[in-house]
Image (cartoon, rainbow, N blue to C red; front, top):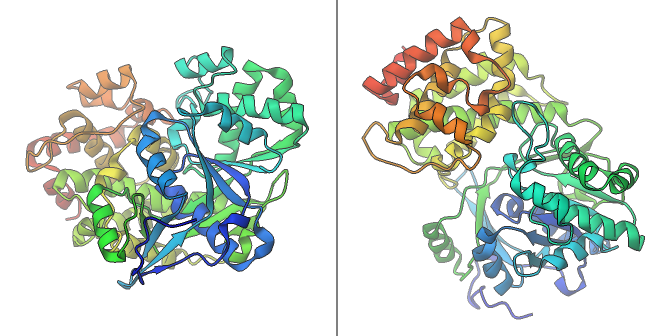
Length: 489
């Protein structure tokens, strides 16, 4: 098929070396965003390049939300192809044409096609990147929320689902009835034990909607845990223009990412899988140690630096990491607060891993947006920060850096102005009505009851609240930047 978005004189892109017409989708992926396109699509594209025996493992994308319209239409107009620019820490960037996305369906346009793809005997894996909050698990009770409006709709209206749970339930019913066999549900989201979380969410929904289906799933579906690590910024309009100019292309949906990538998966597949190990994916019996290392060091450090850096006036991660005090703040957090709780998996050199993280955060070619790291804190804190904070409080550790982080998060949500009195918008799709009341309260202690902190009673720790209240007051009077520097004295 003619490519309309790679210009004839473009020599900056490594093109596809296999015949896409011979590739058949064996994976149906929910949530075709940048992160997915920079890891699963990239790995699969490389596998298709080196092995003709893997042609049954192309990917069909399922996009469920009205907000997916722009990206869906962009990718559809390009026959699923797009460019991926991999930004090297050495300043050398490489761009690849990705062809592993061989089909695409937007549920708003054709919901039945999504359901039919789930039931398709050629599909053996249902993978997803639906965000940390997309699993609909209550942060305080750790229970799937059946009273969510869209979930409640799907429990009754089986044929016209709105959620990923409703779509997959109806698709699996058809799959069961047409004898297509078992399937794997593979979460790729940044959640510790993400396969276990997916299992809890989907089985809770299936049990409530259709107990017979739930029993079939118990016998025929697996939910492996996985851990993915690759920094992938949002692609803004200015980035699209910049990447197309650099690559001499006219791509409506380019992606750029760092050169580091790691994907570790529990080898528990119900109906076969691609030979991803041939292109660097690690398969194991237990991903827990890898998950803990990544979430506790990379993701938690991203959260730690995001709010203070943003309030200080920085907007790009690499710019913030050019500040020696911020680097020291992050490195002390890694070394003093987190390392005692992170056993190194396999033959990992933890000191080298932490140094690599500092280098990755400072990658000028990636230049990730701090606003992206600040977004959806309500979903991130319970996963990245609270588990280790709970241990730190129990063990009587120094709580300075984490108390400052949470005071910064409160200031960010409540006042929505940085140290330079510049206003900004926030992205917190999972803030509840009660959360908003706690944010708007003038008593800093009320904020500690936010749903994001449900895993630990922060108000009961005198060591924490003394520091936290002092930092709330100091940030309000002197700014986040001055407060941070006072901590490092």
